[in-house]
Image 1 (cartoon, rainbow, N blue to C red):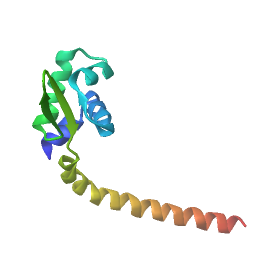
Image 2 (image 1 turned 90 degrees about the vertical axis):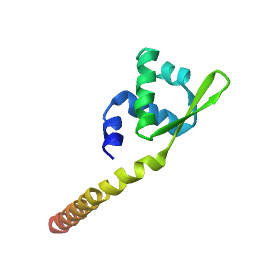
Image 3 (image 1 turned 90 degrees about the horizontal axis):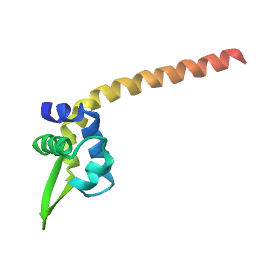
Length: 105
């Protein structure tokens, strides 16, 4: 999970993942979408591949990258406890707001 979180820490890598969420893309297409040089995009793609977040397949002279959302399952599971905590707090806030509205009537 640490490799995934480290990969997600970078804005350019998150942007790549958002693009790939829409569908496969070539390295060139990804480079066109980012404000960094192609060698930098290649380094980001390597980090994402090593973290298991993307995979590449060769088609002739091009590499096609696709998202591997299953790599996010462990992070999602870890976040579930925090999500439950916030949902509980938001439910309590909703209850307090509702009480305040009743008292104002």
